[in-house]
Image (tube, rainbow, N blue to C red; front, side, top):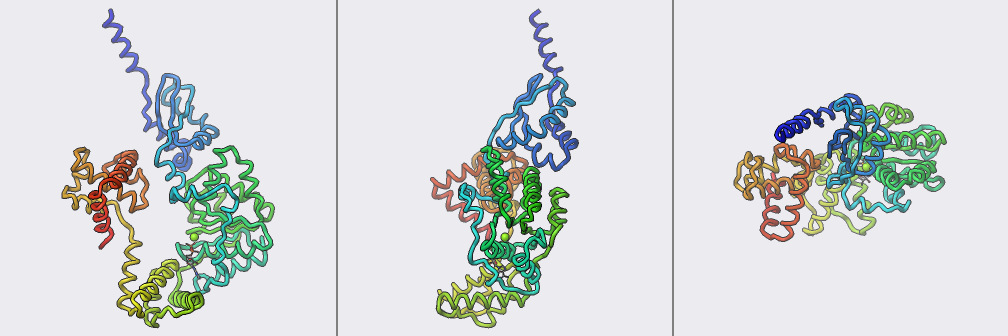
Length: 462
Ligand code: ADP
Ligand code: MG
């Protein structure tokens, strides 16, 4: 009798449908579309499953609020397709380490705490990035002229959209506009990343009304690096409304981006069309002539501020302009480095020495791959690559593996999940654990710290 009972029970359990979360996720993607899916639903975890309800894990309160206010009903009806008995959803917040990184990608933790509530932080215009010391050449002439034009005649070209690669002067021009217009206007200057930060915080603290008021008061609104909003649905929604109300009240809007509006993938069409509705201007790669002009300006700045000559030979100047990359930020970096070396060696550098410095700088900008980190690290510890990636947990393998993960985190811009995938599909939590462990060990263990330094320099050399 008892035996029978048991049998029936286990049978009942077996028959009870168990959700296959992967296929649920797939159907989310199908019915919500991949945009919403990747922005919001992909990161939902199934924590507990009951007959009539499920507990779903999300990373932040903000995610939970956003998802429940918009998608809960549809999520439930999707779930019901997989398991009809479910009639309720519960969300649980399970923060994790990678959280900050995914919400504020490219933001270091330090910079987050840096941002205080004070409004001053939005408008930190740099007085040195003005029109007077912006050097004009073929590649940036149009950008320069339209930035100037905006300052004379507002809301004629609205928005002004400036785009171009890194280090070509976009932020400089935006800043110059801000400085100029600040004299007679209420200027708001913010990067898209900070806009996001402020937005998320306002939602969390229930201060969206203030947020909206705050940004909509501006009659000049300057937003830097708009490409940051790609793939971030909620942010786009808010940006769209902010844009519209500013536009409706004829506030001048100025935007920068690393690419033209039509190339902003994973951005809503209606936003792209707003962005391209005014004047779109690209800032190109500087030619030799412009690079020379910038170097000459730097030399005269140097003379003015230090009352001495930086002692650059003509052929060195030409060499720098010729062989530097197409990035003005880097060009200025090389100039500073060459001048500093010249000062140290107490004689002007020749082209040969200058070559070495340039090579050094260009190396330090080199992209480092996880493959490379794995190879160098496993060679260093005399284990094979397959041992490094294997599931075995013995210390002689686990330690090098953890160090390689640690270095992947420190030396590349890859996300934790991406790193995990490169290590035979490990979970991102494993990577977090590795980073923490190695951090801790290297604090207490001189030898490990030295080894890590050595591996690092092996990775960085050649
Ligand atoms: P972006 O925002 O396009 O990445 P930035 O505006 O930050 O580039 O410019 C990088 C650096 O190069 C800054 O120090 C900036 O002052 C300088 N710079 C860029 N373009 C010029 C220019 N035409 N004249 C003088 N300095 C420039
Ligand atoms: Mg910039």
